[in-house]
Amino acid sequence: MKIMIVGGGIGGLTTAVALRQAGFAPLVYEAAPSLEPVGKGIWLPTNAMLVLERLGLAEALVALGIELTAIEVHDRATGRLQAIDLAAVKAHFGRTTTSILRADLQATLAAALPAESIQLGKRCVAVQQAEAGVTVTFADGSTAAADLLIGADGLRSVVRDQVAPGVQLRDSGQRCFLGVADVRLPAGQHTVVREIWGGIYRFGYSPVTPDKVYWFAPIAAPEPIFGGAEPLAALQQAYAAFPDPVADILAHTDPAQIILVPLKDILPQKRWYAGRVVLLGDAAHAMTPNLGQGGAQAIEDGYFLAWLLAEKPTVEAALAAYQAGRRPRAQRIASQAWRIGQLAHLTSAPARFLRNTAFRLVPASLGQRQAEALYKLDF
Image 1: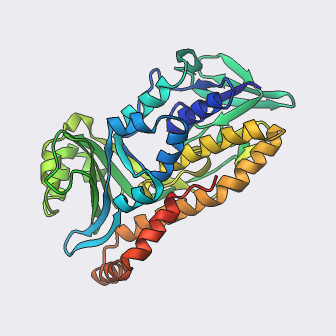
Image 2: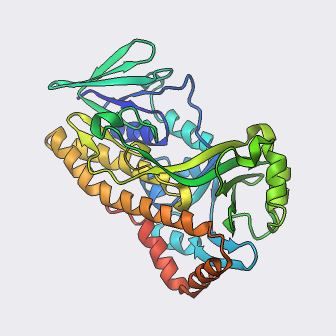
Image 3: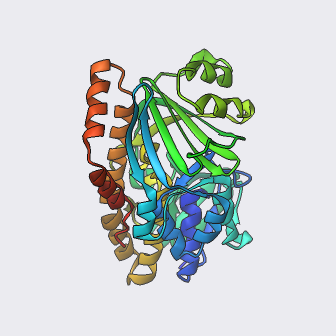
C-alpha cells in the first residue's frame, strides 16, 4: 500500500517512523524548504516517551535533553499552588518527561528515515479523492498519488478540508512569546519545569540542556502585543515583578530568536477521516499548550495509526478503529488544556483567591494520580 504524509512536523515524522517499522514505505511531503521546528522547546511527557521507546528513539532523545523530576505551578504573589513528582512517575512507568529543543527532536525523527522519503518544498494546495486512491497537488504544480493520505499539516490544515470542511479556529485570547536563554538555572531547578501565574501574564520555563532554558510567556491580550514594540525590552518590563530567575532568563535571551504565537485550538471534530484521507495531530485535534500534550498526542496518533494499518484487514477498518480509539482521549485532553489556560489568566482578586485555594486544597496524592492517568497509554 502506498502511503503519503502531508506535514513533516513531529506528528508526520513520528508516523513515518512507525509506518516504516510496521513494514510500509511512506513518503513525507513538507511545505518548508528545510525541516525547521515550529517553536523553540518541547516537553515529551511520559506517554510520548513510552511511544518513542517502542520506536527505539527514547535513549537518543534523553541524551539530547533533560529528564525532569517535577512540574510546579506558582502564583506570582503567593507562591506554589501545585507540584507533580515526576520522579515518582518515572518509578511507576519507567519514563519521565524529557525537556528538549524542538530542533533536536525533529532531527532525531528525520534521522530514523531514509533521506529520500522526505520531500521538501512541497506545499499542499489541493486534495482530490477517487475510488482507487487520493491525489495531492502541490504549490509548484507537481502532484503525488497514493492509496492513503495522512494529513499531519497542523492547525491550519489544508488536508482537513477533505474530512471536515470549514473548521473554524478558536482563539483563546492569549498570545505567547517563546524563546531559549543561554543560562544555567539556579540550584534546585536544574530538572524542574516551573510555571508562574500573574493575572494577564504567565511565565514558564524548563532546562532543555544544562546550559539552555526554554521559556514561554503567554499574555492574555489582543494583538499587537506591546503595541508592536521590540519584544524583549517590553517583556522585561512586563515581567519585572515576577520572581527570580525570570529576569535572568530574559536577560540571557537573544532578542532576534524570540517568536510570537497566538494560542488557538479547534472545537471537537466528529470525523477524523473520510475515504482514503485521515488526520492526526493538530490537523485533527489542535489544542492549546497548557498541559504540554500537543506533541505527545500527535506522537500517540502516529504510532497507533501505523499499528492499526498493519493489523487490520482493510484500510477502512484501520481508520475506523483509529478514530474510535484516539478521538475521545485527545479531545478530553484538549478540553482540559483549554480550561487550564483560562484559569491561569484570571484577573479579579476574588477569582484568583478561589482558584489558588482550590489548587492548594487538592491532595498531592490526587494530583499525582491525575497526572499518572494522563501519562498512561491505552494501546
